[in-house]
Length: 447
View: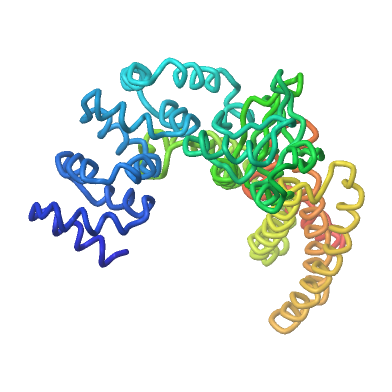
């Protein structure tokens, strides 16, 4: 693709339009969309889009980022805009509208037909995180009394405008979902048979108001290409396709990573987010964690007599805090992932804690032995080795229990478990590890 990119840019620069058109025809729409990001001139952007064959122009447009789409929409005349919009699926049009400023949205809606505009507005009314907000209304519906031959005639007639024809949905006169049938099943069935005789009535469907993240997980569980979306009366109102589910998974993963790093989530990409917004998203958590960390300083001050008597104790605090933080981060990452994939349920809290305690004992004892040998070699002080060993075991157990419990508490409180990730757990464990360390030291050294 890099070689083609250089050639396309060179042909565009020298205005060799025919050669450029021949090359573009062989490219995938997603690759063509990435070419637009290499163009700095709005004139070149418009020229390149206008030479795209009609059949791939709409797919390329959908694959672009919102800034590029906005540039083209503003450059289009009404006829060109309508031509692109007519080729878009309704859910793709909704995605574009959600990213555009009000004046651009107004122009988009102005250039869509009444039926499409009504469907767009219907989808926009659903809550942002619901299945209804990511569904498409472009699917093939069949009636149970149709023959296989009649079904194929209908698919040929309307299938060209539908987002997927691999799965067809069987509904009654009131649009209630009765079953589904794959094109493969239709191809292998005899023409005179009726749809009701070959359709699958064991349907996995989602409600319009179901959380879109749960919907995306069902694609992973059932390996479907599409899922039907029904209302409270089991009427088919749309379908969610696998490409939309993948978008949801990507968005949710990005949001979880940001929360786990101690930042407020941002819907913009890294470079599109302003420096001020980046700072605002990060500073709130950093302030909270910084203030929380003052507790650790307070505890160290409280035990000033201990490290005045044995100054060497202070040198081991960073190692102890880092070990505790790392252990807590490991556990919280595994638990958050398990909760997200529904491998771990809230009812499993005791089972999970018991498992982490056993892991902590093994990890803590190994770390304590290794560190004890190091202390003995370097300082020849068995008491110090015992203090560090006991403190490590206690800190590791505490860190892993907190890393297990806190995400599950967040889940129970209907919060995102990702907020109980590394930064917060590290701060809590730092405070507790210092408390454990100095109490053990005072007891063994009789301070």
